Amino acid sequence: MKNLIQSVIAVIAIVCSSFAQAQNKSPKLENSLLWEISGNGLEKPSYLYGTVHMICKPDYFLSEKTKKAFDASNKLVLEINFADPAEMTDMQKMAMGKEPLSKSLSPEHLSKLDEILKNTTGMTVKQVDSFSLMTVMSLISMKTFGCAELKLYEMEFIEMAKKRNIQVGGLETVKSQLSILENAYTDDEMIKMLSESNKSETAKLVTSYKSENIDELYNNVTDKRFTSEKTKKMILDQRNLNWIKEMPQMMKTESVFFAVGAGHLGGEFGVINLLKKAGYIVKPVTN
Image (cartoon, rainbow, N blue to C red):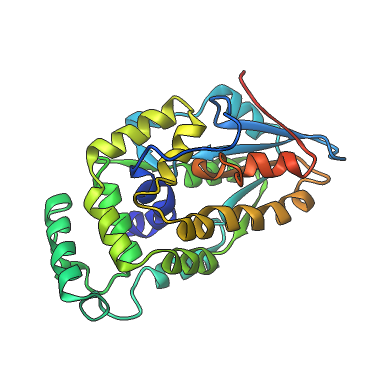
């Protein structure tokens, strides 16, 4: 149950990034998950790292350049501060649906979801009736990795921060993130995405991630066949704009290591481009 609850943080990157071929109108970015932020009055450089949130243990990696940047930072900031017990409590509460799926979904959607669950997890919709649809999405996404043990990047970074005794912060809260996710998709869109979620597409995602291809990861998240312009604005653009308002003060006088979903880095309204527009020097760290 613990891994299931924690996996909800991966909904955007995992569920939404199963689909490719979107058009990226912003300048092409270098292949790097790690970016240095400097200039614009910063006393020390900060770092921006794109995560895939969760990945099979054999595929997990953390480059030496990333470890070096982390060790040079004075604070870790994630999308959500899962080192905060209050946030974890909220996550556990919100993993359960406001009402049973059997009441909130139409008979057609329930039938389709039952079919998807049986094919991907061996479970039935009755077994997850009390969960929110977002939690069910996370459960199905976990299964598409096809491995016995998953590692969560955010949890690994938190453990690293604890060992160094550095502060951990968040750019948003569990409540705000899940509220956005719940309002971003219709039931039809969610079921459609889940029907397309499979091991093959997840394998493509992992390949893109391991090659540090930011543009490809962004394209995966924003495929117009499955992600409407409204949804893209809600789950990516607006959240990125909100984060950009918070980040300057956080890194004004200390070096911060920001770790967010890799899908947030690319695009016209991606964090990298928005930081550049705000006057910062943002460049890939290659070694």
